[in-house]
Amino acid sequence: MKRVKRRYLALQVECDGLPTEREFMDALWASVSKLYGEVGASLSGLSLINFDAKSKVFVVKCLLAFLPQVRASIACVTSVAAVQATVHILAISGTLKALYSNI
Image (cartoon, rainbow, N blue to C red):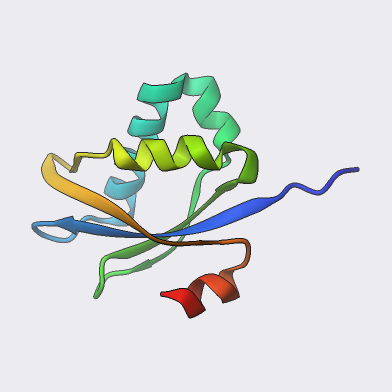
């Protein structure tokens, strides 16, 4: 059986106020669904790993095969919880240990 490869992304959100984990993931899922449909979104394996409220950094994981689509979807996020927002990719890594050492 072949092992599933994942990638971890550190994302920083620039917006007024502090979005909750749920609001951010809803915005990200909406962006992926809008671009690739519900089937594409379900194939991404997108999930939230961690959230640092002080620096507004979210750590999410996705499947390696769907990484380019997830990156395109992140670029399309323009609002989180009806507030204008910009999402920047700080780092991408294959392990959480390497990801945290890069940010």
